[in-house]
Each structure stands twice: as C-alpha cells, then as structure tokens.
Image (cartoon, rainbow, N blue to C red):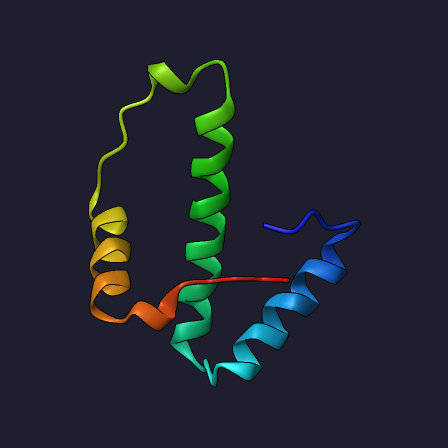
Amino acid sequence: MKNYVDEKQFKADVRRYAREHNIKGNEIGRLWQEIMLDDLLERISVSKYRDNFILKGGFCCRLLLVSIKDPRKTLMLR
C-alpha cells in the first residue's frame, strides 16, 4: 500500500477508489474494514511479536470468502 503523508490524502484515495468502482452504501463500510484489517495484519506480520498472535474469527473468513467469490474486490490504491 502507498505511504500517505496525511489522513486527508488517504481518505481521498479511498473515496476515489470507491467512486471509480461504483462502491456505495454499506459496501463503503466494508471497504474501510477491509483496508483497516489488511493494514493491521501487515503491521502484525512485520512486528517482533508476530509469533505471539493467533488470529481467528468470522470477519477474516468472510473477507476470504468475499475475495474468492468476487475477485474484483482486491484493493489496489495508487
């Protein structure tokens, strides 16, 4: 993911992505959740505590299933 200088730039890119991909309503909330979860998992994976985590839960499974069912859900911010 791109490194952002500030929060406004990040939010503008997410809004642009949602507009370009016709994402509306509840789907925007899911998009934010997916972005935040992806960022959290990336931070955990490079932390010195990465071997101390056990991740489980329905939210992660739902994200995987949605990605498999709808491959265009992949998020690429530039």
